[in-house]
Image 1: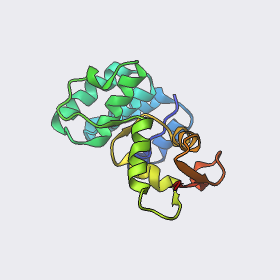
Image 2: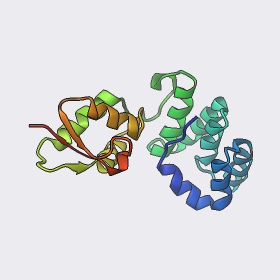
Image 3: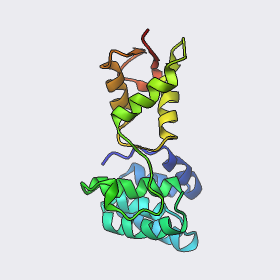
Length: 174
């Protein structure tokens, strides 16, 4: 499972280096234990995230379900719940949401970017466009998947190395 979650960095900084080392070494069983201990002292969503990484999806949903009832608008909790659902082949509707999150597929992402770029004359950094999309909801695609979709769509002009999304920029064609 590829974990591509920028909000995870903030949590790693809160927990410190042991957490990061466990993620880097894909030692998700120890990560679960570390986060369970942390969770006992600091109720938070990070243990649910560890359950997802360790493929313990039902535990993640149970933990995050309780957290979601307490904090229904907490976006990180939404992301963990959605990760657990999608990894099991389920859908956003397979969870009893207090506040249902917005899930953005690649077509909707391109529509949002078209709207954002429509009055811009110059290329905009691709990473800024991706961050903008992240602020709209849960993305069902990676940076590279979005870049590939923009490159194959005649409405977009993408400059830069197409294998390095962080060096690319994008604008709408006239």
